[in-house]
Length: 338
Image (cartoon, rainbow, N blue to C red; front, side, top):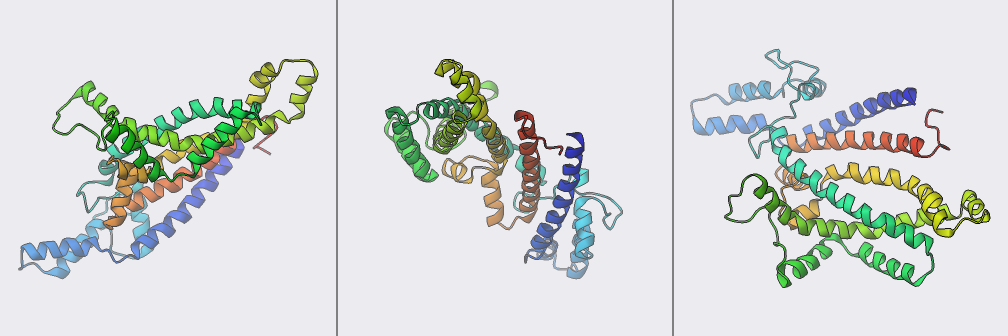
């Protein structure tokens, strides 16, 4: 296992370097030059300044002088800037946002926390519902209750997220007035401490309900299909032939085998939370990482876009590794070290 993980880590590093260079090169081809923008701002404020000198100054400050290879290594933190300093990814510098006027790390800190909290809670809540529901439907395949659940999951799976969000807003916020329509805090309130946290949870409640509901259809059907396959296994037939009760067979043997493929799916969902729920965050006015990413793309704020794109690539590579390792851990028939 250790040798396999080491080989995969070397593979991940190679793939990440290749992809990071390609993405870095693509974003550097865009007609956005922040050194020129800063020089123009200075010239507009002081007409006596020389544009060429100020442009060269900002190029050197941002590490934009030199070829694409040199700039890439500066961005990684493996090559020095004009003043001899190293200030790249390896030094914890993700760049500076043009739109926000702050380091990228400060810009994405709070939105990343909001996205992780929102998606993690919704995923856990959905799993607590779908796993027992999917196991039940798989064990009662063909029954009226199974058919009813299948109809409901198909409807839920087919509805677009924004349609579901609008329906829930109309029902819970407009008609019943239980939850606010959007936002992250009560307008005009200056809550602090635990009271502010409760107010934030109150505003997150409706988005969480929508996200959980939208996850039920696909997840329930996936668990149900895995359960049906597990009930057809030879070991399950053997357990039934021994005279064990059906409920005991399902609880003790079948559902464990059914959850083997679900483990990889769950890991994929949990890692996918960092990509952000762009649709939900925009509809409900939540300051999440998906909304920040969308706004950065609209404003050509390439430092944020580039940093987040690199993070997503790394996250995808780590996710694939965790899925492969988890298969080998939960299923003894799979040996990832071979």
